[in-house]
Amino acid sequence: MNWIVIVDDDKSNLLQAGEILSRHNMRVTALRSGSALLNYIGSNKPDLILLDIRMPEMDGFETLKRLREKMTPGEEIPVIFLTGYDTPESETYGLSLGAMDFIRKPFVAEVLVLRVRHILELVRLQRDLSAEVRKKTVAYESLSLHLVQTLAETIDAKDSYTNGHSVRVAEYSREIAKRFGYDRKRQDEIYMMGLLHDVGKIGVPDTVINKPGKLTEEEFESIKIHPELGSHILEKIIEMPKLKIGAHWHHEHYDGTGYPDGLAGEDIPEEARIIAVADAYDAMTSHRSYREVLAQETVRKEVENGKGTQFDPVFAEIMLEMIDEDTEYKMHES
Image (cartoon, rainbow, N blue to C red; front, top):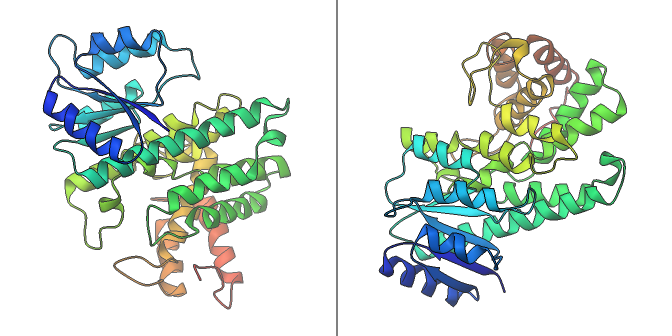
């Protein structure tokens, strides 16, 4: 049974969240302040903390900062912020402090349960990865491909229109890297990066990911947090510091117009420039809620037009070679 601590100065919020989670077979402890949480954590270790942002005396941000000071690196308790007034700026700040997600108030029961379960599953997989790595002296020999694929499938499952997306991006990235001259070890590394490039989407609401129409500006801002969240998740695997590269920078553009950091040219890590081309190609050659797979000629034209702007021209050219060799257009979502 998972153990959840809820911290909120509003008693009605504590009762509502506690009732919802208890009905779904979770153990719940309710606390009314940040200081109460800090005292409680001294001798207790729950699986997850739901922490309100706006509280008197010590708000959620300050509470999380002090909580992280008490935790042993690598053994931190995951935290989800509860908020009714979040903005893109507050979300960014909260994630930078180490929060894994935000849940809006008033609670929607199904959303609360799903988001809590998603984070608990993500943390479990993350810890399994770290434990697997620690068993061996050579990091990449010790990483279980099965665990990584399971994590990738968990992310892809959030979007009914991206089945197999992460595996395909990983395969395309490895092929581009191979043609560029990467040795086998670096090919395996970028394959892992490709598998986990979208891990941050675990923190994006399912309603946004699966929305059939155009996203609002607010919804797009919530999508844009997934690279930094993914990087934050993967940097916990300290034995493999490069693993976060694909997650963090796969939406940067070669001309500097991408996100989250607006990097340009060779300031973008090379592996991320490869994954960016592979990711865009798969997006165009996969079914989406608003369109079918694009024609190969259309995809080729988009990659060609993106050379030097969205894409590194070297890796875009390799992708074009792969497209031209695929005369029967087999390289797309089936």
